[in-house]
Length: 76
Image (cartoon, rainbow, N blue to C red; front, top):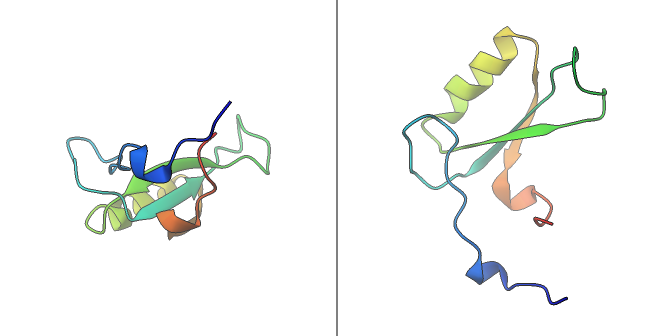
């Protein structure tokens, strides 16, 4: 099995409904009712939508942290 060149991968796109902007942020979250404490789900966000996605998750007690997409581990 060979690893693909990151340049060959599709660009990461914002998870906000209807947005097709490049993602710059990884919004990490966890629903404690269904996920183990160490599990992290990821929504991708552009600069415009990161605050609203973070606020949505925070209101439910799900938001854990936001980090640059460049800090995400490589896709498997």
